[in-house]
Each structure stands twice: as C-alpha cells, then as structure tokens.
Length: 259
Image (cartoon, rainbow, N blue to C red; front, side, top):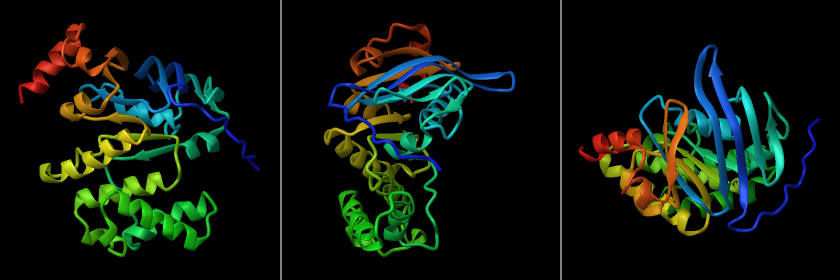
C-alpha cells in the first residue's frame, strides 16, 4: 500500500519543479533529449514549437503520464522520478493538474458530476463537499448556469472549461495545458484563453503547450521554443518572440506570424 507523504510548502518564486537531463525514446526514436528545466512557483511558461518537436511528450513526462527513459524530476525538492522509475507517483499526480486537447468528459455525467468524481475517488471528499466545490469551480470558469448540463449540450469551449474546472478542483500546485484550444472553433478559443489568463493572474503555476502566440506574448513569464526533442531557446516573451537569437526559432516564428 502506498503511503501518502506531505509535500513541503514552496513560497512564490522558489523552484517548485526541477527537471534534469530528461530523455524519452520509443525504441530507437529519440523524442526528448537532455531536457533541463526549472519551474518556479507562480511562473507561467508557454512552450512553442513545430509538430513533432517533443512539446506534448515533455508535458506528459512532467506528470509521468509518459515514463521518461532517463533523467530526474524533483517536486518541491523531493525526487519523484529518477533513472527509469517513478518514486512518488501519487504525490506528483496530486500536485499536477492536466488539461488535454480532447476534453475527456464522461458523457453520462453532468458538468458538476464530471468535476466531482475525481474529488470523491482520489481526494476522498464527501459527495456534498465535492459537489459544492464543483459548483464553485464551474462558476469561476463562467459556467454557473451549466452545472447540470450534460456534455452533449455544451459547446466545445464550454466542455474545455469543464475540464479546467475539474483539474482545479483537485487543488493542484501546477497546471499543465496541452494545446487546449487547438480542437476548438476560432470563436470559442477566447473564452478558454480568458480563463487561463485569470488563472495566471491568480498566481497559478502554469506550463502551456500552445500555438497561441498572442497569448504567450501577453501572459507568459517565459517562452520556451522546442525542436527535435531539444529546448532550442528560452527567455522572456519580448526576447524569444520579439528578438529570437536562434535561426530555428526565427524561421518558425516567421512562418507562424506570417499567417
């Protein structure tokens, strides 16, 4: 039986997640190569790069949905992954909320039910407490009138906001967003990005894989550009987006910003 260990508190601005020499391979295909990354509490990081650059794989490795093939991950100073084995998987999963490109909602449950179920099963909350928390989180993401609606009665943008509320209700320290607007119609993107902006303003630590350059420029503390499984360049948005040093970054932004 796994034992729950209280994770130490981390003050805003201190390193909350540290990644060293992270690798991921599928047989002979190297997807991530020697990723080094320190994430500070309250920091908003946007990860850009072409398809196949390793962005989403890196995100999934950070909460061990994908097991890396090498490297170390530390959460609040405690090693949660080393070599090729997770050490404190439950702690890591509890502290990281993830929102995917697909909404992954249960079609037979209301919005409230979708937000409550993990609270009850994983956090051990009583149903009444979980349902009240679900209503609170759904209200925060602008869905107060939709708590009893089923997913097929919600737009794609509303479903994605339910997914964000579901992750937030678990009280994560870090939120991971994996191209959460890429499956949405353009007119629905703004509502989801507005919720993410409010989260950033509230001090939530966020790592966002995104193609939304304007969002990255406005919200990110740091922009990371990846290609070929490497972090090619990183820094403040004004530097990476406004005056990139690396030729590969310049070429990518030239293609993206021309459209």
